[in-house]
Amino acid sequence: MISQLAALLAVLSMGVVYGTDVFCALVQRSALARVDDATLTAVMGNLHRFADRRMPVPGILGVVAAALAAVLAAADGRVAGAVAAGVAFVLLVVWVLLYLRVSAPINRKLTAAADAHETPADARILQRNWDRVIVPRAVLQGVAVLALGIGLLSW
Image (cartoon, rainbow, N blue to C red; front, top):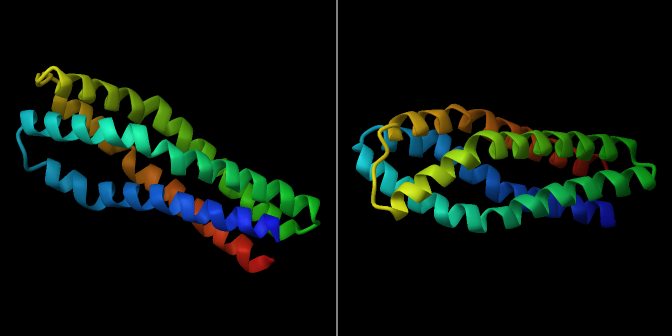
């Protein structure tokens, strides 16, 4: 039962992050393509200021809960649940690495520029590089949430 609760907590936590990434992929990219570079910098810099402070909570909670679900399911002999949660955990670790290596440095640059009320000459390139990984991020999240759901069905 505890492994199921951990998997459910992971689904709920990662659902927050998954929904955010999907919104960015489906809506934000197109909307930002229609604004000037100064607006892009101000909006994204301020958005990242708050997101980078608040989104780690559900993100970390989801990754830890997925790992816990995998370990507890394995300890309970629930192979399918353990494998599903383990797959989700691995996908989430890849997501974290993609975020840390690509997205986070761009977030910091745009936030610093917004703080300084400056528009970097490469603002559009920064955003394009950020956008380049948002679909893979959303796919990783989506498959991880799906794996956790499949794991819950197998209990």
